Image (cartoon, rainbow, N blue to C red):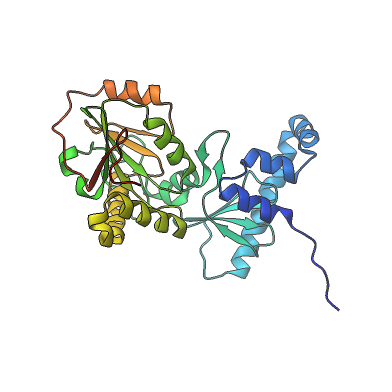
Length: 301
């Protein structure tokens, strides 16, 4: 006789959130229809709720220590999803069930706030804090496996533009360097809006940071855009990842302009346009891996 397990809908909902299909806030409402009632009670007694959350976090940390003694768990925090905890293990972040049995590795997005919560957790987690200098001191170099912005601005002359896909809008006298993951929903949104940005040359470095599917999509996009170098796709992407790590790129989309100033996120095209206008006089155009005009696409992809 088999015992039927109680269904765990949070696993399916969490999978949708990690895939970028369902916002975290909506997921919380799906999993907890009495959230409004709880919120009212929490506002009346916030301290009790905080104590309960802390107790649950401590309980899971003890369970994980017993279940996986060889794994160093540095931090356990309640995630935005009920019953799911954000667990930091060195440079890795996982989303774990309260019993410590089920782990999900991937990026958790807040679609309403347009934030990559996993990237934020990594940037502010124990590994990043341990690598941070004392208050008032100058940051000299990022620690291994911790992406942090360097103090020096990158120079266009130092960028391996041969590993970038080039797209020219209009005359292309302005320069925009973009780090993008083909599977990132914000990157796709930004790419669509950049089509209306005039007089700019865009150098796109593909960086597959969201898992195996991103790797496949990036290889295919590179092969379509630069068919003469299709066989070099994996080597190019690996070099791009190393470049992103060196520059302190924590997520996508991530932009650089000609003078090395940085900006990230799927921002309105008008804001990007004004940001580019603030740059000094443009440098001479460089050669990328493959070029296409957005209004007359010749290479496909």
